[in-house]
Every structure is written in C-alpha cells, then in structure tokens.
Image (tube, rainbow, N blue to C red; front, side, top):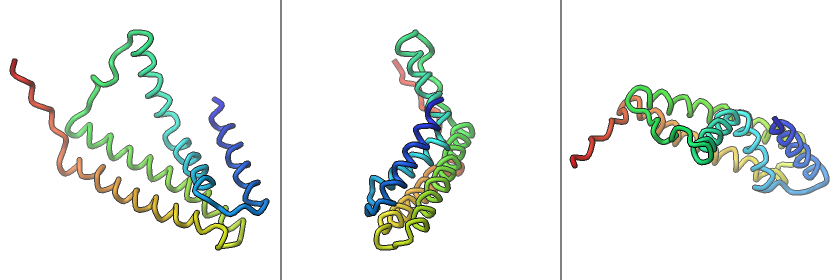
Length: 145
C-alpha cells in the first residue's frame, strides 16, 4: 500500500534535484523507469512475492509447478509484453516531461538515451514474447526412469 507513496517521493526527489541544477544521469532516469515498472507490474510482482513467501515459509504450493505451455504460455508472454509497453509509456512520459520541464537538452541528454535504449529493449522483448505465438512452448518430454 505504500508503493504509490514511495513512487511519488522518488519522483519529487528527482525533480527537485534536477531543478537545483543537477545534470540528468542514469540514476535520475532509473527513477522514472522504476515508477513505470512499479505501476505496470506492481500488483503482479507483489503477487509473485506472496506466492513464494507462502511456499517457503508456510508450506504452500510450489510456484514453479504452475508452468504454462502452448497457447496459455503464448498468452502470458504477450500479456507480459503489453505490461512492458505500459511501463515504457509511463516511464518514458515522465522522462520526456522532465526534459521539457528542465528545458536544457544538454542537461537532459541522458534521458533521451534512456528512452532510446528502453525502446530497443522493448522491441527485442516484443520479438521474443510474440514468437511464442508462432512457435508455442511445448510440454517437455518426461524422463524415462
């Protein structure tokens, strides 16, 4: 429940530092990436951590036993890519707004580099994620004992 508050504090600290004359760096950019990923994947990451906590400390079901194959796996991969796209849109929007707000391209060049690099990563993720639609992940053959 504190995640949105932490996200807001991180964004405010980044903007204040930049307004005080700091040159944008990868550290400032990571703040925007973190916020985008936190919003797009936050619930999913917390659910993942909860499943593993239950497994490790409460004797719950092994999360690794729920592997998906075929169409289900392809759907999960595509869905994950759309979340990644949402994180990119949110994070890049924050970066572009900060570039506009600061108004000094020399001081915010690192932000544009981050947007470009993240865009390349997004394209690579698209190729991998959607490849499972064409070539579905198959159920592994059981070992003969």
